[in-house]
Length: 282
Image: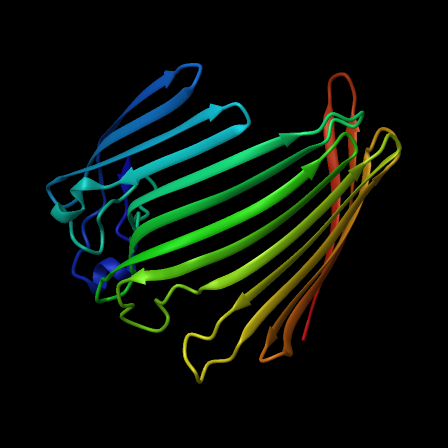
């Protein structure tokens, strides 16, 4: 793959290089059994700094009756041998700033004995990661994301409620205010109903961004969207959405969108036409 030296951060950290062709190789391994499914990836990449980069990733799933567990792990063991600002450079000349991360996603499913095949699913996802900042003085930060949710579903209705805590700073000191990950707490509600003659989809999303300092403004965002597909064939759909951002409980900006889509299908040709209107306002 061909890498280009187009990163301002690398130049500021005296890690720039001449564009050149580099090689890489990847190995994939898979294991499947009745109780466990795993995938393992390992890659070796040449770097512009006269050394080799190495990364690996493992992911898997195990289940027992109504319990399901997904897990994954990613790491760059060669990060210490490369410049701090460029622990891993990919084929698109982009810098991978994640040094290590792991995630756990347990879920439990309850099935109901009714004519609508109803089910209730509960789950939580925990993601812990170590990342570097894209600043002149490179620092390593430990961040965490937690998401929990509940989903009810049957043959004609689906409702889901999610709660998210993102960018929790567990360790490390950001060198600048702009490099501080934006922490937020979120709640999302999505409802959908599919009948033989139409389908209706609704979602509402709220996020609260705590101020990083006492002098900073509090920020909140609210998003609403609705989509409908009338008719049995559902070839036509209409949608509308509203997005609002508040700072210190005063509206800062907003955006309204509306659109329509048409799907055309025949034996040999499938096509779609979409029209979208967006109106930003303050």
